Every structure is written in C-alpha cells, then in structure tokens.
Length: 304
Image (cartoon, rainbow, N blue to C red):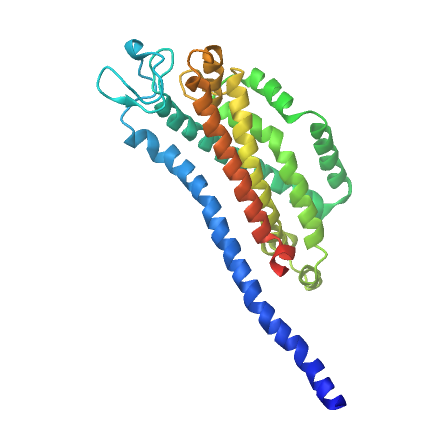
C-alpha cells in the first residue's frame, strides 16, 4: 500500500504538467490571435492613410460653395455623395479625414523613430557607463519631466512655427526622455546577466557587447512603450494643430478640423464630430494593441 501511494505521488506531477502544457500552448495561441485581431484597426488606419487619398475621388482642398454645410449622406450638385458631409466652404469631410490620417501617420511614426533613437542612445550610454555621465543625463531628464509635455511642446512649436517637420522635431524633444529612462533601466538589468558578465570576462569590446547583448535586451520594453506613445503623439499633434501651432492651414489635420468645426456645432455637428471620432477610435485601437503587445512580450504573462 505504501508502494502504491508512492507510485501515485510520483505519477501525479508529470500528469499535471502534461495536462497543463496544452492549456498554456492554447492560451499563447489565443493571445497571438487576439494580438492579430487588435492589429486589424491599426492596419486599416495605415492603409487608409497611405492609399485612401488616391482611391477616394475627391480632393480634400477643393472648395464647393454651393455644397457647403451638407449633412452626412447628402447628394451634392454634381451627383456625388458626401458620406460624412461637407464643411462651411464645401470641402468633403471624408477626404479631409483620409488626408489627415496621412499626417497623423507621418508625425506619429517619425516622432517615435526619432525620439526612440535619441532615448535609446542616451539611455544605453547612461546605464552602461554609469557614474557622472549617468547622473548628468538623468538629471537633465528629471528637469524636462518637471514640465508638462504639452506645455513644453507648445513653447517649442511657437518658436519653430507651424510645419510637419517642426511638429516632428517638437514632439521628439518632448518624448525622448521616456525612451531614455526605459532603455536605461533595461540596460542596468541586462549588464548584470550571466552571459554579459561572461562576455566581459572574456574581453569582448564594449561596442560589440552593446550591439550584441545590451541593445537587443532593450528592444522588447521599448516596443511596448512605442505602441503606447504613438497614440499620445497623435493626440499631441492634434492638440498643436487645434491651437494653430501644428501643420499649416493648407494641409488637413484632425485637430485643425475639430478647431474649425467647433464654431458650427449647433448647425453642422459633423464638422467636428467626424474627425474627433476618427481620432478617438485610432488612439483607442493603438492603446488596446499596445496592451496586447505588452502581454505578449511579458515573460510573466507567458508563464500563466
């Protein structure tokens, strides 16, 4: 009886592990499927920004004063249909939203690449070298974090003037600190790992160690931060355009459209509601996608 009990005790854990292994595998597969599903709105947004203005037959800057303030779905004088209505000078709202999506994509992508590159460089150098250089860079980061990012962006944009390039530079200067802090923390954790210590003991040069071991360890957390920051950058660009400090008046922008439509909320609600809804849906989709990316890249989430 003792032998049978011992046999049952020995047989218990492997059977439990075997039963849990398919469940973990199916959960990981489900997470990847959910990650793909949440990426579909992002892909739709990117596709609309890239090819939307080419396949939609209307120019976003064409003025039709005879078709001004037409509601969504109205038939215009030339027989076409304004699916999202027209503004106070007869410009098609849908055409402007598609063109504004391109501006948001360019600003969001370029800002993340530029700010991420600056933050990665400073963060890795500060975390790997330490000492006075680490203290200097992090104190500069603390000083910048003491100011609200949107106020800092407004001050810089007011000096540089309205243009797409200046918006990218402005938002990059206000966002690099977040990437620098994350990459510094990842560097401090990575340089104490066994394989890094072994590489250092064998005399691997620091530049080669950074490229092969340190920087790859910082990429997963930076990807998570990037997915979150894209939505915040798009909101910041819309805020600057709303205040007249973003893109020039000749280029449609969601924030600029909301600013123009706010004076006609009682008579033409669609002028501000449609671009505002597009902005909200895109930022929400990017935020939910960022949560899924975080869960996929989190080792603790993989174990559950």
